[in-house]
Image (cartoon, rainbow, N blue to C red; front, side):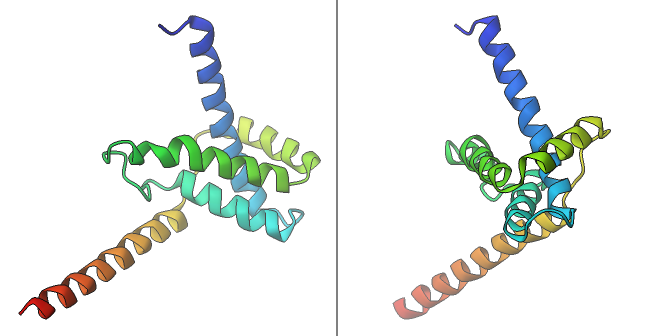
Amino acid sequence: MTSPGRLQRAKQWARQIKRDVVALWFAARDPRTPISAKFVAGAVAAYALSPVDLIPDFIPILGYLDDLILVPLGILLAVRLVPPALMDEFRQRATAQEGRPSSRGGFVAILSIWFVVAAVAAWVAWGYLSAKQ
């Protein structure tokens, strides 16, 4: 059984994750953010804000693995790379932000990865089937 306190903590954690993703989206675009932090923050925000997952959620266990482990770990890394004063500012902006931005770049990147994987799989299958004949 889940207790009301545990559910409340989970909801608070989810709100913080959403806020930090938007804050990282701001950090990736701010000229005061160090280059390494910009790269990591941009990659994490683009992936988290993309409407498509690298591993679709309908795939058992693995589908939610990226949402439960990879995204939070990426957020932790990116937050550590952004200077604390800047991160506080970005979090305040994210809290004040109405709605959630979307990442067309992340969408295109994920679709490109899926396309490359499909092309390589087709090429391997073609080679395998040609060798059988």
